[in-house]
Image 1: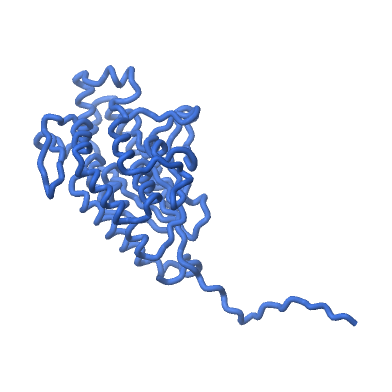
Image 2 (image 1 turned 120 degrees about the vertical axis):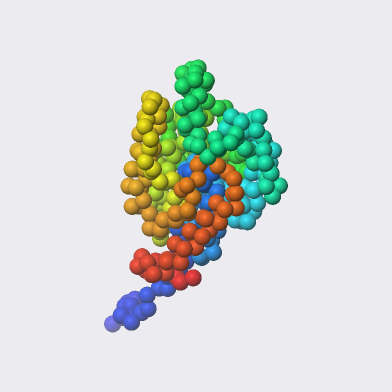
Length: 331
C-alpha cells in the first residue's frame, strides 16, 4: 500500500508573522506658501521609519511631492527650495504677482524679500484683486483672457526645482491631481511630463491660465479639493497620511461685490469638502501655519519647522494606534 505524502497542517502554536515597517500613501495638500511645511512633515515621516509607497499631491503639494519623489533626500529638497526663494528670479516674480515692483525690498539673512507698501502685505490678496476690479484695472483681461497672469512665474519655479522627466520615472510613485475644465472631472495624472503635471495642478483658476493636456484643460483643483485623501485611499498601503496646510474658515466682513460673494462661497465650499475628505485619512498632520496667507513666503524656515514639529508629534502616536499594531513593526 502506497502512502501519500500529505502536507503538514500548520500548528496552532505557529507564531504570527512579524509586522514589517508601515507602508504609507502620503497626501500633500494645497495651500500656497504654507506648503513649505510639507518639507518638514516629510522629514518627520522619514525619521519615523514609515515607508512612503506613493505620494498624492495637489497644487503646492504636487510641487513639494514631485521634488521628494525625484530626490528622496529631504535635506537636498530643503536646500533647493531655499535656493529658489533666495533667487532674484523669485523675488521679481513675487513683485510681479503682488503688484509691487516699485517696492523691491528688504534683505534678511541674505534673502531678498518682496516688500509691498506699508500694511498691504498683511491684507488679504483677494481683497487687493477686488479693489483692482472695482477701479477697472484687469477687467479687460478677466473678461477676454484666460487669466490675470501668465504661467511664466510657475514655469520658472518648476523648471528650477523639477527635472524634465516622465511621471513614471520618479524614484517614488507619484499621482498629481488637477481639475479638467472641459469634462468637469477630477483628473489624476500618473503618466506624462512631471513638470507639466505640476504646472497644471498649480494653475490657480483665474490667476494662471489652464494647461492643455490632450483634450483636457487642466487647472488647480485645490480651490475645491485641497486634500485629496479619497484618491490616496484607492492605493494599496497600510495607512494613509494626510498633510493639511489649509487655513481655517474665519468670519468674513460684508461681501460688497459679486466677486467677493463668489470668492467667499468658493472658500466655504473648499472647507466643507476638506472636512469630509479628512475622514479618509488614518493620520492627519496639521502644521500650525493656517494664519499665513498663501502668498506669504517670508521666514520659510519657520514654515518648514512647523511641518517638522507637527509631523513628529503625530507620528509619535503611531505605535499606539490599533491599526498600526496589526500591520507595522515598532520603530
